[in-house]
Length: 147
Image (cartoon, rainbow, N blue to C red; front, side, top):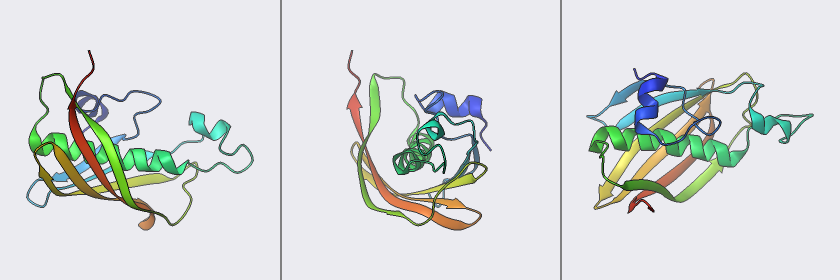
């Protein structure tokens, strides 16, 4: 298990854009991670999306899956102290199956499909109550940070 303090040592995002609350498990043998985001009515994005019918924006669900993938990648490859950053490079095969609303626990599962040089590819799923809410193949690329 990984709590928020350790998550913040691996991911650069911070409130309100940090979208992983806890890592439940990491299986390095199978290159998978299982974590979650508690979706509360207090999320800032619900003020405008949509006030009368709050729904978590799809782009934020994709970002949550990408953050889960990033945690897996950093755990597998080790976070380096150099000036490089992993950027979200692509999302393929994106699907939305059901809305995510206040009160949901968004389970985030990522599996590393492979990596070559500085490009990592992950199969990701977001579930609510064991039902698929969204899925995507996410690609990340390592680049030198701008100074």
